Structures are given as C-alpha cells and as structure tokens.
Image (tube, rainbow, N blue to C red; front, side, top):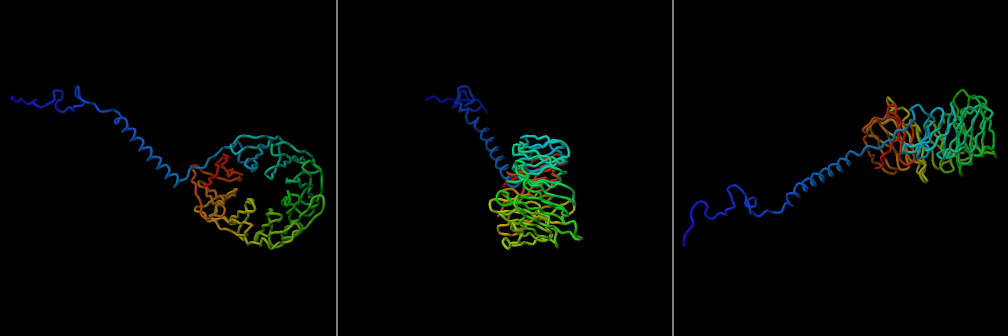
Length: 392
C-alpha cells in the first residue's frame, strides 16, 4: 500500500493556512441569524437597563409638575372658579380652564371688582351690579343708589355693601334682582359678608365698630327678608375670618376658633381650639369635614415658614405639619395639603403623616390661589402659571 507523503498529505485541498473552512471555497457556512441577533440582543439589554435606571430615578426624584401659562398679568385680579380661573384685566372678566384655554369673556369696563362662590359671580363697578352664571351669562344687571364697596353671591341671595364707612348699608337681592332687604350699618364698617345654612338661606356680616376706642368686631346673622337672628361682639380679640361648617359658623380671631349657631350663641361642639400665634389662610370643605389651614403669624424674612397646622372641624384637632425646607405658601385641595416653595412642592394627603416631595426645575416667586382638581395658580417672575400639583 503506497503511503502519501509531503506537507499537503491529509489536508483538505480547500483549506488554506489561517483560513477557516467555512470561509474557504466549498466550505460549510453557518446561518447569519446569530450575527444579526447578537447586536439586537445587546441593544435590548442596554435599553432595559436604561428603563430600570429611569424608573429608579423617578422614584427618588419625582417628575416635575406640569405648568400652563396664563395671559393674565401679575397685577390683575385673579381668583379661583372651581377648576377654572377668573381674572379681570382692567376692562374684561376672563374665564380660563385649567388647560389654559379661554372659556368665555365678559366686558364690564374699568374700575370693576368681583367675587365668586365657585359657581356664580358678582361684579361691580361704581353703582352697577352684575350677576353672572357659570357660563358668563348675566342673570341680572342693576344700578344701585350709591357706590358699591363690596358684594357677595351665594346659593340663594346676592348682598352688596354700599355707602361710606359712616353710612354703610347692605342690600340683599335675589338672583333675579328683586330687593329683599336693606340693613343699616351706620357706625359699623362691614369687613366681610357671607351665606350659610341650607343653600345659603342665612347671611352673616362681620363688621368693625368705629365708635369704640379699642377695636371691637361684631358678628351679625340674618334671615334675609325676615329678621335679624343674632349678634355677638368680640371685645378682647380681633375676629378676622368667618366660615361655615355644616349649619354653624366658625369664627377665627387672634387666639381661638369658636363655633356659633345661627343665633350667634357659642357652641361647645365642636369645641373652641386655641390658635394663638397662627392665622387661618384657607378653608375647604371635603365631604363632611371642613379643613382650615393655618400658618404662623410671625413668618421668617421674606414671608417664609417651616411649619403649617391643619384644623379639622369634625375632630377639632390641630395637626402640625413640619416642612423640610422653608416655603412661602400653602393650600388645600380635595385630597390633601400643599406647601409651595421657590423650587419645591410638598404634599400631605388628609389623614397621613409623611410628606411627599416634588422638586421643580424652575423658580416660583408667588402664590395666588388653589383650584379644584389639584392645581394652583402661581407666579414665576412676570409669568402667571397654572401648576398641576403632584398627587403621589
């Protein structure tokens, strides 16, 4: 048997030194699919890792709240209107939704003012009185016999304070303009007016006694068109805020919050609560609870504070809320308490004790009002913004 010899013995004639067989002519080539899948798989791993990192960052640093810019100026009269915003620009009342889009406008001219109960609006300019519904339609326009200083609208009545500080009176009208009653307040300077009890069928007036050497405030209640129902004077402390709770009136002065019935008789339930050194800044009713948000009277330089208090009438408790950094404003939504700083928003749901924090990528300089639905109207420099507040 003849044996082959030489360096090429036993080799495939298509295999060359340093060249793999599958790359040689006639060599067996594997599928190209693994080559394609390898980079795709690598990219998938990178994307997955990136998503995990973003998720973890989002947990540690929550996303910045959403903002919408309003056409209003910082100097305009801007007020909340449910989940919308009302602002008077010097000639026209404008209603804007939380998305920043105009809903309607109402032209009244210069020198006007307005107030709202959240569903209706009363405007006044000189002696002219205008009452609007939620769509900006006038339900009646009337001219009173004297300059209007202040007006309020409720579920049943409209009240307008006319005259000067020594000859003031309050006209009570229906929503269609029928005059129901004129209440004389000579010698008493009306500070505020409001409605309460059974769709606002009762009225209260908080006034300052001008004939006294010491400041004396007086709360009076009425059933318009029928009779005065009660009155109470505050001689030692200056009463400055009245708000309804069920069919009662809660009166905040410089030392306490007390409850009164429609005859102005102080009640033991809910009991009086001491708030010395604190002032009521906002009130909101949520279900059966009425919450009052308090901030320190003596704030730090620049109006900053590091703590708030939440008074809930159902339990008549004052919950302390300590902030991680100083803030310049606080507000109440349907779901909880907010504190707003220049670049941070703190949120505390009702009934909880742990603050949630959202850091902002822009600087806020002022706060105007809270809207329904978890938004606030704020200021950043010369811009008026609707800020969608965090809820988690």
